[in-house]
Length: 281
Ligand code: NAD
Image (cartoon, rainbow, N blue to C red; front, side, top):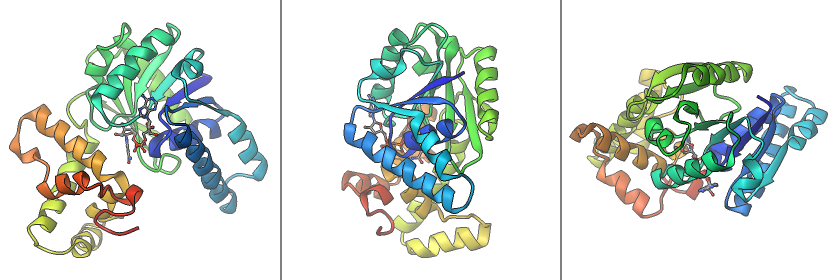
């Protein structure tokens, strides 16, 4: 693999592009929103400066890394030569199905199509294409340049060859890939999101305030971040979307999203990215 396209340049897309370029890949970063691309490049430059300050890379490395990233607002312009596409667009099923249908038409036959989705079925995404054996989940964690895990999700139709290639690439990026099968929430969010949802219920039922809930989990369970702080960091809209996938996918009321989470998202309080969530930023 040499040329990798990243679709969506938000929180995750810019981190994935940064990491791939740092490890020598030619990266085409694509977003329908030109302002998001500008912001992504600024974020990548800022994060590279932090790496320079920690003496992890040099200024010359920074220039080389940035030079490997091109940006595009038209999907066709960024994917025609891709060996791999990592889709990191908005967590919305219709959006992802449309993107994969387009990618299947536009990309060369050999291109592997990966999704960074937190919860949407890889099997369903694969069924939208004529290459379901070459569709896979590549679930990076936030912040991508720092976090070691890649959850590699095998759809029902994903081939062993595709899985092997994505596992090898993840190791090449100095990440630790973990293979999982395609069921709602995979492993990471099947366990994490009900924990976050329960913390929101504890706040909703006034068991304790946000800071107290987070302190219990940080000091009592040795979590590096409390669940409410983590929810703000992930984005409350993303948390709600994942709870809905678990609820629909398993049909079990234990996955019902807390009404407080629903209200906060409806009111536009999305956590860190909107300046207000369980905390003020
Ligand atoms: P985000 O809202 O920060 O960014 C999404 C970007 O996708 C936006 O810039 C938007 O303009 C762009 N986009 C929307 N439709 C598009 C299209 N048709 N073509 C090209 N670009 C399009 O979202 P995010 O937090 O970066 O999440 C992206 C994906 O990564 C989601 O599937 C999410 O579930 C997953 N994810 C998020 C986290 C996290 O902590 N935020 C962690 C792991 C995985």
